[in-house]
Image 1 (cartoon, rainbow, N blue to C red):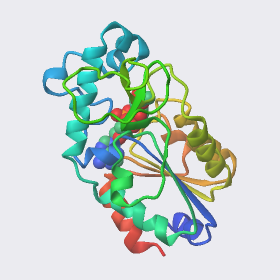
Image 2 (image 1 turned 90 degrees about the vertical axis):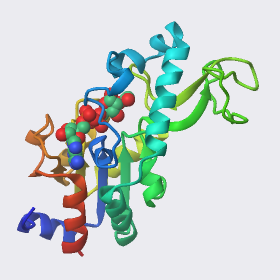
Image 3 (image 1 turned 45 degrees about the horizontal axis):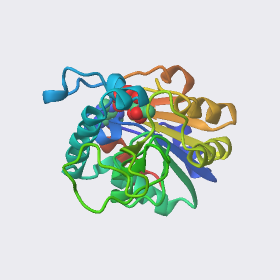
Length: 244
Ligand code: OAD
């Protein structure tokens, strides 16, 4: 990105509050495949939609648990990228700043972002599938899936599966932030999944200046004021440098 359009700069400088929604694209630069990239390696024959559902877990808990264990290993080896780090810096610089993410990889926290609203949960959280509450597993176990230490039920990853409701508090926080934001950044998401995908439209309706950061156009592109074509790491590092 060569220069920052004047309207964006002036809206940014006068912004009382900034809100952000991120998707898998911001973690792509950390080596974490985006959701609609082809599955890699031994998982190539399954679509995420066929694994990330309560029905898939009921049908084949071991397969689903192993898929998530594979994704955890992938993320454990990943490092936060320039985009994650830039957002953590911006958060420290802007008094009213809210970050919501659709990602479950925890890379925003590892980059230093405080309490991002995790709209789709977190890969490293374990839940009892029967009780719906978090479980602390004693240590890595070969059992797949492990059993709940309280009731013996199967343990599942603490992520939102297709067809499941989003965590209420996280979504309410993200909706409130969108409603009062003066600038709204939509970064690295295809915007194809709702209700997260509705947030930028809600922000625009409430008067925010909405900026999309993505190498490709998306279904959200028509709703935003400005589309910055490029990788999250490069563009956010430039914004961090060029904006107060
Ligand atoms: P997608 O895989 O749908 O979209 C990733 C987006 O990131 C695409 O628009 C890419 O163009 C863009 N992208 C790729 N590399 C990028 C980069 N370096 N910088 C910026 N953008 C880049 O992933 P999401 O939109 O996050 O939901 O998917 C949303 C949800 O769909 C996921 O959270 C998941 C899935 O169903 C659940 O698991 C409930």
